[in-house]
Length: 558
Image (cartoon, rainbow, N blue to C red):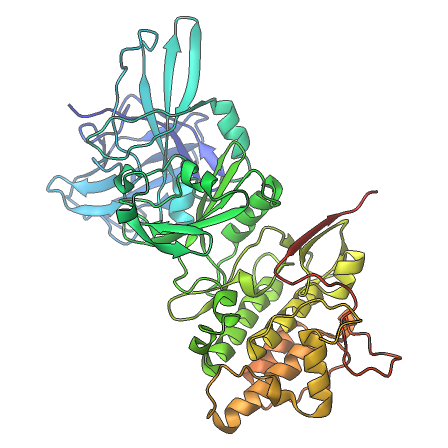
């Protein structure tokens, strides 16, 4: 007997559309689909889901439109690329894998959502208080439209002898042959309050702990990642809560595959993480609005109590710092790849500052936040502390300084003043690191060592800038390679100049990098260098002795 699934909620864009079934179609299931001529209407009577035919066409489409408004205003179409021809009868149903399927009587599919992580099972069990149980499933169309994914969220509604009660079921098994195993109940009010503001993205269920891994058995392990073990799951790889807790507080990453074979990276922020809920929401909301080949793509998120999880596209070569600062692996980055990475990051930053619909300051650009895909294409990640700014690009002030020493501009680190020029400074540091294969570290002025900025500045003034090039790279690139290296060093030094007004905008930076014929100005002294008014030529950094791997958060009192 087929499980009947009453459609209670359908999320569209930033808005949950609460659909109440009309008598013509009171449920969607494999045995009771929505046929052509039947519709579902939202609880407020604003939206309607069903079949329609556009003007001057005989084809049929499944879509959502504003109810009662003429002419018909369609806001979403399922089978846009596969219209239903005249004379063909199709219907919408939920199959055994939890996917929505639009198909005709012969089984020919016109559209389907990807497989969900839910096995459809219903049972009242042996609890006599659960007299009337209805399983409800909703399709997140926001995730479908933004990411090409559909994610189903499930809850149960039942009555007790004392009155109506609502809860959510947390699942530990996704095998369709096994019953759903509840591990925690949460109120619907708590669920909605936790996910408020996150409706523009796909919402994953926290309890996606796949039983197919046999409790993260060694046979399911793919390898060890930078933040923990890598496991292979049957449908969607998530780090189990018990395993994640064993890694300790902080950030954890695990890699796996979606049902369709798409690899994902899962980042878990523990309740002890310095990245709070506001930063988590900020990253989710921002990255959902930004789409660029050089920005990492967020597939979805999950909020569960104090647990926060982000699901990203999988980057085969992890972060840039894992290659760049590893003597054994840095040889994989020849100059051609390094120069392409510099150009790619510049494109991504230019998009954030100028070409996106929202002008964004990243505020924490560094080698660890540049991810590399299988072809070494760079993608900027980690938008937790990013900020949207006005079109004029005016400076902003903050009492909460967040970022990473070694990459932060002087005006931001010391005075909390940030602008697009703050990102330009960070980019300049990153360029010099990519050229040299060295980290830029804060220095005590009494030490003999110097920061990378001071070292590069000294070599530039001595006319020996080419010696900054990483020794791990094989020589033989010829004159063009040398010209590109010198140009990168000069651009890097222009970007890290102490005065923000002296630094170029990213549009100019990209032009100088991409066009070798562009004449560039001579750089002035970089920020953090203390050689002005001094006989020293070392350019030692005097601000901080903190290594640049540490992300800083400073909250000042009023």
